[in-house]
Each structure stands twice: as structure tokens, then as C-alpha cells.
Image 1 (cartoon, rainbow, N blue to C red):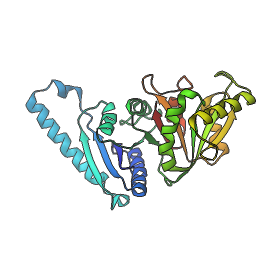
Image 2: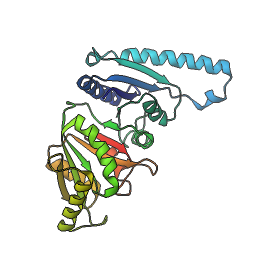
Image 3: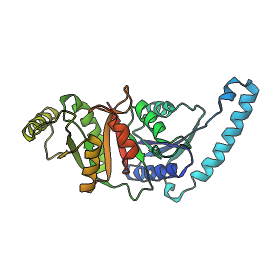
Image 4: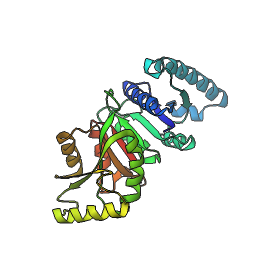
Length: 276
């Protein structure tokens, strides 16, 4: 892992993300690119060139002062930190920069859907994840540590998911020590018998060229995928949850529906998303 992008709006949730990213950067000797997007008013786009230049200069000065204060953190000592200011409000700018600099990970804070100030509300988090080809680690609270000893990745064990699962495992194995692939058997999403599930998992492992020595296979039955993930987290010592999204269709897990949206917004643990 060489480059980590941290979008910030100078809120406490941005601080949570920055602290998490800093610990990861120390572990992997990575550069931190701390990115702030100036929330420009619509009126500036119809203003004269002189007015735009004046407002741009003022906002850039304010952002620089905020950066100086925001980045004055003891946990950043010894790290390579690159501040970056973008003028656009469009949130897919984060994903574009991540691609441009070949970032390995985006780490961002999220307030969920209960708060509406700043850029990191739940809906905006969804937009960034939807546009990002780079994995996104979403942080909801002040990190206790970044030793994600146990990470659960929900999957339907379909043959079509194999490339995404294998790509996800490349990063997850760097972030955590124990990776569990979780099958959630639900009554409304193709309920399978125990024998049918076992057969599907065996076929998946054969085609993916994986064994249960490489990963842990877990099973749970519940009323919905989100409930199954929540129940599994409560029953086990899980440090982070991972989901795979369909970017073109919004945050839809390959199980279907709005499962990834629910997980991203309501699971309190760190959530790591990958796009198919």
C-alpha cells in the first residue's frame, strides 16, 4: 500500500478518518493525501472572472489556515502528508483523484443518515463509493486501533463474484489477519438447504482456487442480509465489515436491493467497500 486518500471537511468524523489513515500509513509506509473540496456557492459560477478569482483566493486562504490547524496532529509526525484542495463540489472528484494518483485506498468519515451538515452525510458517502474504483474504508467513530484482526466479507458464493472476491482479498489480507466469507441464507433471496449451500460453496472454492486454509467460511440464516451481517458481528469478534457494490446501479450488493446502502449507513463498525 503506497498511497491513501483522506477526503476531509474538518469535522470530527474527518479527524476519525485521518487518524485511522495515519495508523495504516505507518503500518504500510504509505503517503497520505489529505483532500478538501471547497463548497462553492452556485452564484460564483455566474460571477465575473475577477469576482471568481477574488473568491477563489479567499476560500483557498481559509482552507490553508484550516489545513494548518487540522493537520497539526501528533499522530501525523514522521508521515508524508500531502494537502490537496479542489474547487469542485462534485463528489466523484474524490474517485477521480484516487484514480489519477493511483491510490490504494480511500479512508473517509461518515455520519450516516442522521446528520445533514458537511459533506460526509450518508447519502454523500454513497455517492463517493458509487463512483470509486478504489476501495473505500468508511469510519464511523474514533478508532480504537486499526488492527482489523477479523474482517467479514458477505458474499453469495456465485461464480460471477469470484474475480471481485479475489481482488478484495488482496487488500483485506493486508488489513486483517482473519478473513471470513459469510453466506447469509434468507427466505426471500433464494433460500437454499444446507446441502445446497455446501455444494455451492465447494464449487465456488474450486473455481476460485481457494481452500478453507486460505480463508474462513461462515454461514448464518436470517430475515435479511443486513440482519444476517449484524447478527454475525454480534456473535463474533469482528473488527470490520466488507461489502461489494455495483457502482452503475448505486450501492447495490450483488445480492440485490439496497443492502450495501444499509450496511454502509447503519453498521457501526468500519466498512470496507469494493466495486464490481
